[in-house]
Image 1 (cartoon, rainbow, N blue to C red):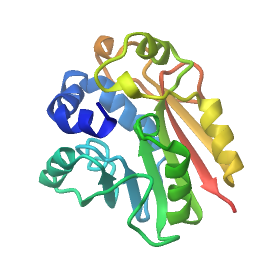
Image 2 (tube, rainbow, N blue to C red):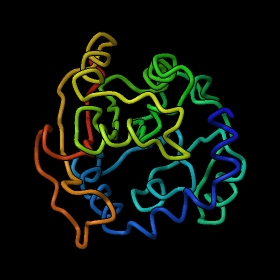
Image 3 (cartoon, one colour):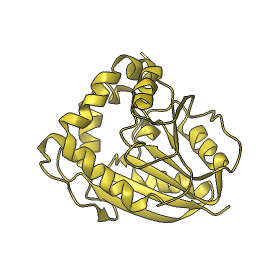
Image 4 (cartoon, rainbow, N blue to C red):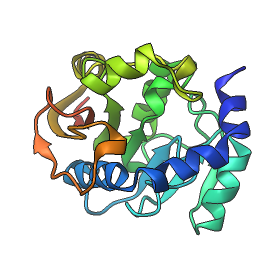
Length: 209
């Protein structure tokens, strides 16, 4: 079963995860807020059911799943059904692009990142949120794979940083959170600078070339 089919079939289960693990979700939002630009036209690639697009006030989202896009629209989010590797936008039109969890799910992550760079303005920012492959949770997810992570390709923070540097990004910023398993978190965990302790890492970098 392909990734698209997984998210189309289990879209409701995906969306409910954020309610069942509310404080993990809210902690991730807080980390993203630390690196997300406060203004400007933004795009979220892999917006899903708009769990991040909506509260972060991102201008538009794209997602491959029609069922997820339907929920996002019901939440009042502007969303387009499209492949992450073939963005339906002109060059250099966004101030920032957010890729939250999506990196590990797309078929061609490098092609997606090149597309993200293409639609970014010079000095625009790319925001990537990942479960760090080297973290306790990343290791656990790789052993006991859920429906959604069964086809995931995990990345470490260093791998993401190296890829972005070769593509012309610099001025990196990192914030981490999720210091326990999601089901154990009973309050919002304050994001900390850097990475290496928290399972979820929000990475920001600026396009310099």
